Image (cartoon, rainbow, N blue to C red; front, side, top):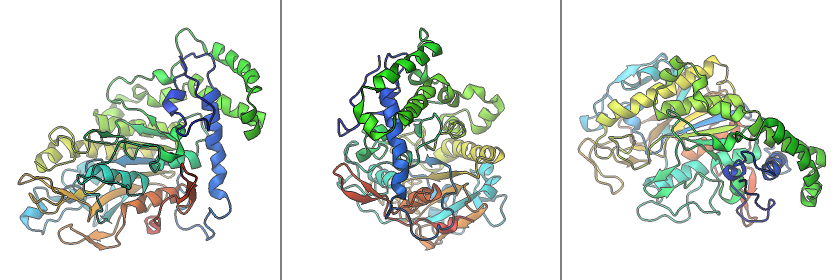
Length: 488
């Protein structure tokens, strides 16, 4: 049964996208979702209001991206063992892996990334990410900063935070869903295949916060490598398309009893948004995007028949179908067991990276870049692969208060690497460098929230845009400048 919440503004929290999509044959389908779509689209003009758009001539890369895939490697992968080997460093820094050549002269990757090495002509490595922790040495607070661009107000000594709250800053994808709603009958922001998580703190930094729950992501928290259930987007067997369309005509009469809506938007516009909501379910476009069985077996296997690889393939399909922002979270909790699937390699670093994590990262990320490029999608889609921090240069040393094995690496926010590609980003390049031990940037330091600013910039959103929180107080979208020089 469909739950019809109050009209927008009747509660401070709004209502969730998932609840609005629980529509399989409900009698008054479309009223609430249509209103949400209408209100989201009304935000398009906000960033263009006087005082909110940049007055200067647009700089390099502005507006080059139509879409974004954010690959969040939650848990903190080791930059030294994946992206930025130091073969001449002491043994307790350089570790077990050797660098290998890539298809770009002068760029080296770790030997555990041979497939990505053949795709480096499509991407840029940023090897100078860094920040000084202020209660951000453990995962939850660092994730919150990476996702929202803001440090949390209250951080426990362990670095963990309280659960998600309505006054949180919005996740970047939620801001994009509000400011750049999709023109397609698709969810503007999808997060998969699992929530952001450290221990029992689940979803912090992954909600719309003070924007209201109507701008939350569509949470597709299932394993794409298995059987995916899409009850939210499926008509009940006893309800035909024709019956739903008949209800659309009945709904037009219901619309006449909605003076608040009529004041907000002309009747013809509301009708358009209603039909967009209706099409989301009836057309089957969203369901098809999630159906990986429509892909060739060979391509699925190339991505890797594991959760991460299939999540990236699903991200490509969602972008093709019209989703604006897809966030793929590494499918393990931030402080999970590294011998299972977590990047948090305190106890043992090299075995898990060689045998578990890097083969999955390598097959998934390399296939995504190659696949997107061959389909012409990379030219208009910004792809960013990043974690909340890197790992300590010296093995077995505690840097965050955690205990570490003799070949384990602790947390290290002072220097790490991310990969960025597409939407005009220079191909086959390295931006910035680290020192001889990967401990600090040698040149061109980049704060991780500058990468969020770069995402907004690429989508044609001025990072200096003023937004209003739940108390109607003005706040900067983000307090950082984009990295303009990433764009060619």
